[in-house]
Image (cartoon, rainbow, N blue to C red; front, top):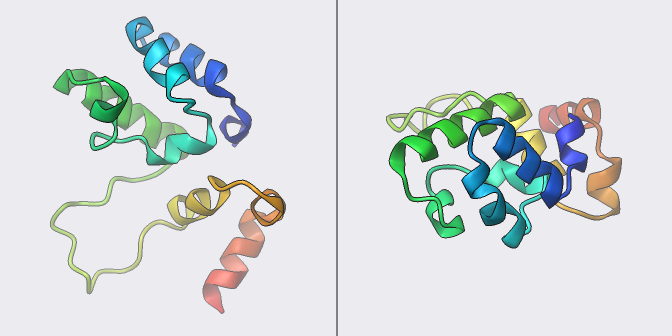
Length: 114
């Protein structure tokens, strides 16, 4: 999960490698780092200045692939099982600070079971 260490320039290069060089500034001007990618989806992209629907779909899908997150269906019932453990872990790791830096996936899974 090297992307967690990316700065906004690394994220901008990644966006460019996806075929969207026109959006590099959207990510650098909004200081989107690898840790903040967890929050990038079709709801947040318009706030960054990305409003073309097809581009939003592609970028959101690539972010999910990068983060290894399966998309939660809109029709999901609250009675369904909890979200993917990797997605929950990445939300914890998206924060900064001593605890977030020290958290390992194994420790997260252990705490999740407790």
